[in-house]
Image 1 (tube, one colour):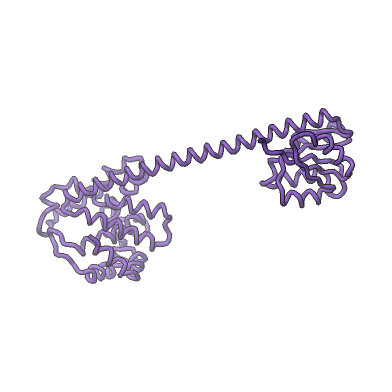
Image 2: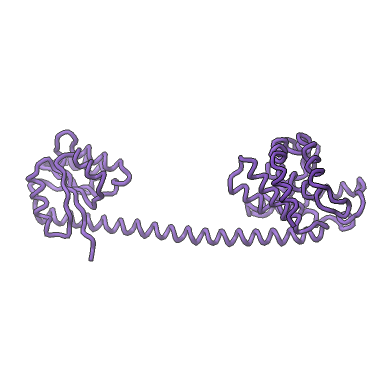
Length: 349
């Protein structure tokens, strides 16, 4: 059974209200009434209506003023208002339509006209509400589908990144565990930074495993050398950030673009003595500054072909001593104040 429509009749003359309700009572309507604009305002605070039959000429708050107030209230502005007046002048009608009324009826009422106008506008209002509801449902479904596709896309990107990072790790002599630890350490530093959004923190976590992807281009004789590199060999090794940039920068993915920034800038030093561009201070992207600490911390605390494993205490002292020269001093301070957290992260296998 269709729900009854709720109608509010506003008129300062009670007899007019009785006549209007008497004409419409045979229809499928519920009625409320108000004898003044002020009384109507109070009723509208507690109840919602499908249509308002509003007299224009009332003392204190007239119909035009009340209409303005209703149309400025978000919860009420869509309710159709039919003005009622004994003055059938074009100026009144124009003013009413300008304020947002949907129609006009004149007093004394013509029964057939009043029933027809009220019924037509209630039907239109019902259709508009249904359309609005279905639009919301459609938008919600589209958003859900879009979010699902984005989640699937993000998962695919994440899997690609970890596949590439494992290929990179096997080729460069590092381990897959190294890139995962770097991701976790980077994420923790990003959280402690306090200036990065949840999205940025998530980005650095997903993108940091590709920090050394450029090493896949470096000859294995250099990558796997068990001794200190010669100056010529180190000059070749220093090209891997540029190789990474060339590999990653062509992507349209924001995640891969972030990985390109990290790979290109994580060997830059705070004092400008790093490579490949000699960037200094805040000119180094925050992603690069964060991963610089994460990469060095994990590399020092794990055995490599060219070095023995350092203790966490030795590695942390190395980083702290290079605050303001190799590393961002603010990030080093955050690292120093949370040593136990980072010790747990580097000990993960």
